[in-house]
Length: 235
Image 1 (spheres, rainbow, N blue to C red):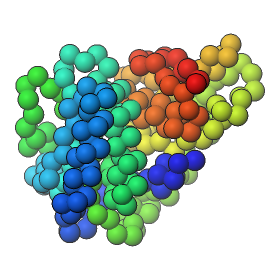
Image 2: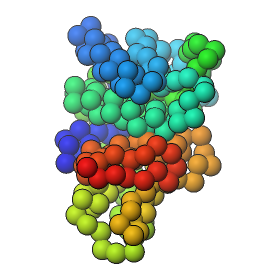
Image 3: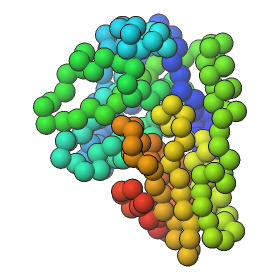
């Protein structure tokens, strides 16, 4: 399994030291590549700390937030949120490989502090920065999250024993981040056809579906169609 999938954890406590110009250039280069492929307009923001200074918004969960990535795209893109999850997780894993910490953030920040074009929608942000060893609070959150990881049988319905490539993909899905750790994205393998779906009754659901699809593909290969109940095509 790709090491970044296993090593990535959500980090909310960052070092005061800002990321270097070299690190910033690498992140921006990755963002530009992903935007070119996806049609998204994700953007690096060197100092977005003002969006996390309102304790009523962030509930004091974050400290020393400085740099972040605006996860956004054109409002008319019908697959916008799923694409943000799918390509955004590519970005998160690449940043993990650069030995930096990240965290998907859906609502615990002040959107009014982040100016975007009127033709665009800001779905969420990803905070990024240098991290030390996990704090006690982060260790407790991670431990709790691990205890609550759903079993594979709770995430996939099948009318037959799962082939190895499906099991491999699902193992990566179990390590995918999700809003409030709800792990709502589920998979169906029936008549030798695999699909992925989510309830889509919460603002972050389609983002979570995109993230889950990306994790599956990275381990199993192949490609999902866009959309809820999108079908997987094994290469």
